[in-house]
Length: 342
Ligand SMILES: Cc1cc2nc3c(=O)[nH]c(=O)nc-3n(C[C@H](O)[C@H](O)[C@H](O)COP(=O)(O)OP(=O)(O)OC[C@H]3O[C@@H](n4cnc5c(N)ncnc54)[C@H](O)[C@@H]3O)c2cc1C
Image (cartoon, rainbow, N blue to C red; front, top):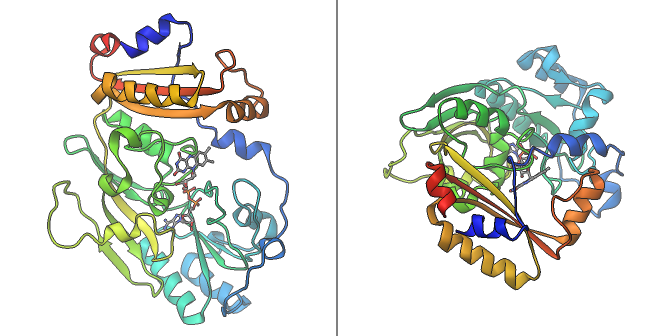
């Protein structure tokens, strides 16, 4: 009865799922930050610098149009999402296949050129952009969805697929992606796996170590590692894919993966609550887990300062009056009547 009983107190609002904030954010801040090397005491490693000969080699692998060298084309790849750090790479590469990634990595390794893999560049800790002049390897064009099997729920795709696009395609087959986050309009599934992103549905579907069934990755030497599996109940041998989940590009570049997508829920409800204290947040969380059980799909806390920062920045109005804490609770079930009873 949690949702309904709170609704009757007037502190609850039911509404559609939150839209992605990513695009809104990216259009509102575009001041050019200081170079990372000038702002922090960082030391460049013993790497070579990119020469015109290297650019010519990259063009021979990718063709001219997928090798960016003009400063106006490159700037966005050098600055992170929050506009807090900036590198000074002179080249961005956009491969389309694992073979091209392997060739690039092999060459960069032989030449001792440092490489920064980049997904949707929505990371909030500066890891997606070069610190110095690393070659940026963007996965943007590796966006093919190879297979979505509605029977097994397994989706196989290249690493540069945007999470929101995968969500739409999975929905068409009656499935849902096991993770959801505010940056889904821009972040890549390869970036999500590389950062072991948690997101809003973790409480329901667990983290990516459970959902990702296999990965394909290219190592720094240019070796393609096939760690793919299309089998959820795979208990054979070692599962080296786990090393790549959360490795943030340090072990190699994820080029392809398979992921388990649960069945989409027919009935989704969202409640936004205002609470008087952190203790009330804790007890509401417990009540939600106990009372909503298997239909609880998301449970997030927001403090007053954070809500105020968002409403002020985005010129929005909070749907309910002022409280020190707020909670967003989502339920996803298969039967509206049953869910509403809860
Ligand atoms: C509005 C908003 C909400 C967010 N919410 C959450 C959240 O709920 N939970 C959460 O965990 N994060 C969240 N984030 C942070 C960010 O979106 C995630 O970390 C996301 O997974 C990054 O994906 P990306 O494709 O943008 O990767 P990038 O930002 O491009 O890269 C992140 C890191 O992964 C590496 N990388 C990217 N792609 C690959 C690849 N194919 N192979 C190897 N390495 C690669 C990069 O080198 C970098 O180190 C949020 C960000 C925003 C802006």
